[in-house]
Length: 196
Image (tube, rainbow, N blue to C red):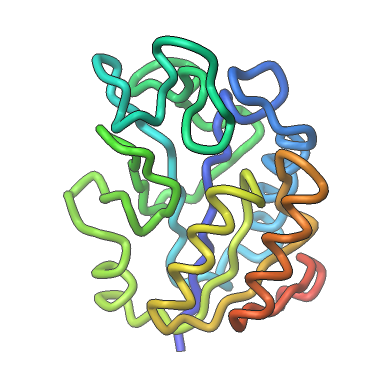
């Protein structure tokens, strides 16, 4: 059994002061770093995803380039490839062996499974290659990319644990609904002090 950690979109544009800031995002960044420092050898693989949107398109309608975004299917411009907003939050310290996943190139790309590694491999392929059977998930935002990534992990046959003290969402209501959906689909809701 190999356990992986999914760190979803802990990026400058999704934390305080960013284009699509989530309240508590900076605390999540610091908390994930503390988890990794406390348990440096517990995860056989660490995956860190980032929105990495194309700068010269609406990314499949994901960017509202004309008119107001609806904050459901269309959003303000955010996490444009190569910009500071697309960078990891400075409080996030990642191990050297981290697998970096870029997603949302020309499309919405909510799930870590929509992206590819720097070597062009898909997340699902990397889980199989590395013998991953169990995944802990943390990051931003609970009600969007964490939800989508978690549901896809379950569909991929992973045993999923959501570390609820290391996630933050856009709104309490939709975040609560996302956690309920994940739990109903088979995820275990836990906290980082249960990691051992």
